[in-house]
Image 1 (tube, rainbow, N blue to C red):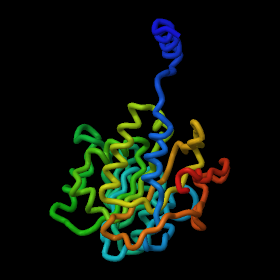
Image 2 (image 1 turned 120 degrees about the vertical axis):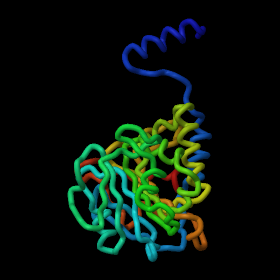
Image 3 (image 1 turned 180 degrees about the vertical axis):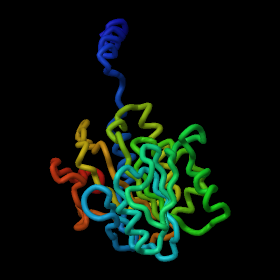
Image 4 (image 1 turned 30 degrees about the vertical axis):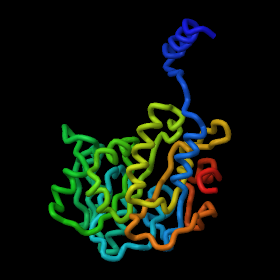
Length: 265
């Protein structure tokens, strides 16, 4: 097929809102997935945030942690409520709501979106932390569900601040875009930055969005990752059994979605 015909096809598809281009090699996607395979880090996993959507599995390594940063509030705060019951206060931020669904003295709320710059109704993780915990050097928790902004937030966060988090829970969106070569580079840089300081302790697919498969490599669209700082990791061994006994489908009326085998074996 000559170049002129290829360009014509691309233009036709683009007119209908479709972007046609080269795909990331499956072996490159699989190589990144292998780096992200969950490990048993020497701590049992516990569920924080209740059942269904909003609950996450994290390592049972919370002693000494006083604060959690939790961007993306929406209509539930069960994760932060349970932390508050454990004497861990939370800073919450979400421009789409006027307040958390529950008001507690352990909650401090900003009507802001977390992003890669300090402009308008956005602020950075560094600015947020500096606002409330300037000079604070003890370990923190980050729990982030911000609908696709997570990649730019991680890439924008200074390494020193990133390493201050003992546990990070992130809901990563649009994972299927790993098959787009341009997006793959951005996603890969984001995960590689996290892997400098953290080990993947757990992955859970959100069954709301389904998955896509290319050349035998299955990629769920939305994945909940739990990371544990390498400073807190004991003897590691691969996690080879999924789902975890504490895992629950995010949505009871959706199809079941197990973590694909290529993500852990």
